[in-house]
Length: 165
Image (cartoon, rainbow, N blue to C red; front, side, top):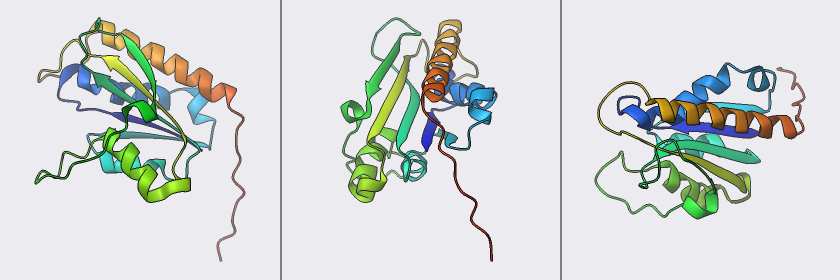
């Protein structure tokens, strides 16, 4: 099972790029034809990332980043390079997907994917607003093509039907 999870805030301009990649992927035949591919718009819910990844062999996370690089730059990074330990606070909304990678590995152990990749796309704007900037929209389409190629290169796993009694 491959889990593909888009993260971001749809109300903060280019921060929504992970959600856009998920929307585009769900419209592709590559994803629609595979029962072993799970696609999720997690928004800003890090816990959803952790729960959705459980039991999968591969995890792909898509999000925006702000590193100072050229807007629309794409960084493909192993999950082990970006996972981080969560330091609890009084804010229930501070458990991000990078924390989910660390926590999921600790909690679920062998039931958490070892193959984790983050596709981070450099944002032009993270200000309040709806819609992606043109260079980030173009980068989202490149990431979709990259993920489609990865799915196509991965042998499909069929799940046997279990009779309901």
